[in-house]
Length: 273
Image 1 (tube, rainbow, N blue to C red):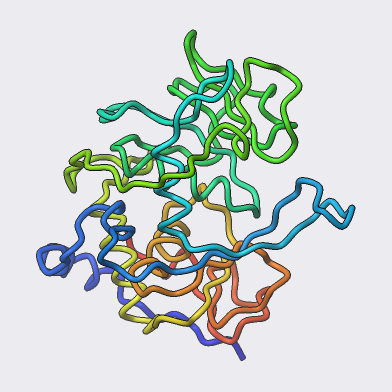
Image 2 (cartoon, rainbow, N blue to C red):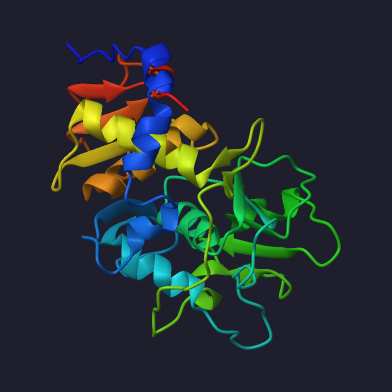
């Protein structure tokens, strides 16, 4: 039987201020700082693999991959997907899939102070859009907006390719200061770095995530509670983030406790934000 979440949300919110004051890392980007242990992420890549298949499973350290993204340089005629060094107020739309690019795009954007909207509307007021290449054309940005596709190489030269253009051989950790009150997630409501970290810290402590544990994300990242429990909480603990839903982990973040094979399942309703 799956372990059930029995969180007293009212008491959790009542203690929010005290928990936030105790937190040494008050922005999401600091979870990837060089002084912290870098967890791994397991993902599914839909682009063709060397053996001729169209699906490839991979794993890599989160910090190195994310800091690589935010330190990119222009290549060829395309622009890279990197919010400006001073990105407060900049919004980035991210169309998520079970591959790593959407999570790396989220982390790269918030490292620089931009806010991210998962599952954006088709007509989105944002500086940039990151989506599977086949879906990029379904969205419209304001003039000057930047389109980035991941997976297949875009046929449109005005669309950047995440795997080709958004990469660097010399990853660095950005020094752009981001305040805890800066918006990290936007959508139906804005969630600050501090609020997102509080939600992740609460999940990590209540469910006792540890380094070496694996957390499978089985619910959509458009729900900020899933980001807190499935992305931020493992980062805090140094646990693995698993986007490959064919794998079975120690924990899962899922819409319900009946459909996940893991013995310990967190549902969004049990995550306070």
